[in-house]
Image (cartoon, rainbow, N blue to C red):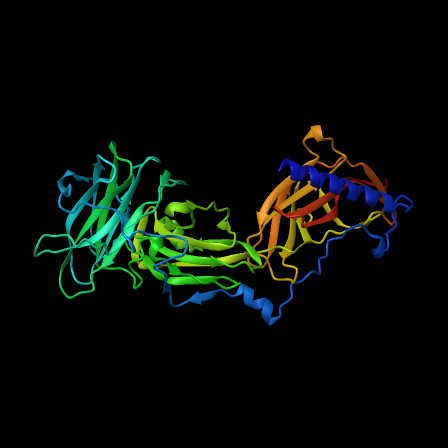
Amino acid sequence: MKRFRKAISVMLSLMLLFAFGMTANASQGTELNKEKQAIEADSSFQLTTNNEQRTTNNEDVIERLTRVDKPEGITSSVYNMQENINFKAPETFSLKRETLPSLKASPTAATASSATYSGTITEEGGTQFLYPIYVKPGELLQAQLDGPFSEQLDYDLYLYEFDMTTGDINPNAIDASTYGTYFNKYEQGSASLPENVGSRNATGSEKAYAVAVHSKKGSSINDPFYLTVDVNSQYDAYEPDESAFHAYNFTFSTGGSTLNSRSIHSGIDNDWYQIAIPANRNYDGLNVKLDSTSESYGYKAEVYGALSGNQMALLPQTNHNVTLNTGTYYVRVYTTNQYSPDHLYALTLKPVLRAGKIVINGYDSKNGPNDYPSYSYGRHYRVNGNTSLTVKGVVTTTDNYPVANAPVNVTWLNQNWTESSGNRTRTGTGYTDQNGAFSVTLSLPHSTGSIAEYLSGPISFTHYYDLSGVAAQVSGTSLTATDIVYHFAYSIYGG
């Protein structure tokens, strides 16, 4: 930010010097021809409204999802299990049932069975089993493994069918979650992504299942894991998709796309989507956002990148914007507070288009938006000292598509103040809206009144003001718009 402020200050200083040079020979009180004015805000700037343009503002609604099941970015041993799990000596009874704070279900939610267990694994390659878990016809079983919370340990989660007649576990896993340990920073603290599995009983009779926690790397008698199991009869049609291994394709348009047919029905429900970022694109970021009601519930929409060994790295978001390169990524929707199977969340993915142009197209202050006097330096906006100044503008692509959610930095400079005064510059930041428009308000200091201009007429006045500069820049780019603003101090009657 300091480097940006210095560069902008230099540019604005040169612009102001240029303005002074253009008017060195001009008499006071004379308006310059428009062709000779310094840079002026174009208040008549308008976006094109042709049909091609308008489609970027209309979000598509996704009505059907296609499942990935074998995403290219992740490989899972569920498809080629190599771990040697000992089925003859499960340590079932060493698991301890926990009474932990649970997430809140809505009052209208259907009755669900949920419990959390804890345990430890004493040797690398060891396995803890929990069975039998009974699931009635039409019910959905979900299981989530949290911890152990150590970067030196890597545990995986497997789901099997349990034969209620023989008491045996079918050795072929029907689901598995095998992320590599990779600690991300969440609001609740640092942790590796939890392992999640699920299965829906689509038969006409009750079924039983077994869940296995397997140590892929390391063991500990002091670092417990926590296994939560939930059986629910109310869920959306796309379940189960508990891990990135079973993500659904989410294809979005240039104007953005919205999915509004899914719900979070339990405290451990995870909905996953796979997105592809092509090389031939006009964006480098994606705005990933849930509707306001879902956000108030505590729902989160996060974007992950897959690293080697199935490690899942949480990508940082700024104002819901995520920077993305060419490749495959995964979006996770879950809750951190409450949930309701009756509430359909709206997930919107909208490309943050590459900015190609930025324009300052207006101002507002205590003087109103139309205060453009014609002093000796041309027609420019006038703002009183010790008040606020709102700088408005638009960011578009080179072919005039509005760029939404673009970060914009605005700097104001009055070089009559010294740097040590703390009044020389003011800076502010903002984001463009869906129409590419930005509005940033700055709180200005007093004017030094360095310029005195006599205005003759039936009633004569002398106005005292400074020339100040304004620059708006798309953050992280060289795209900048500059303008001159009169910084008004006071006037004297009859001067």
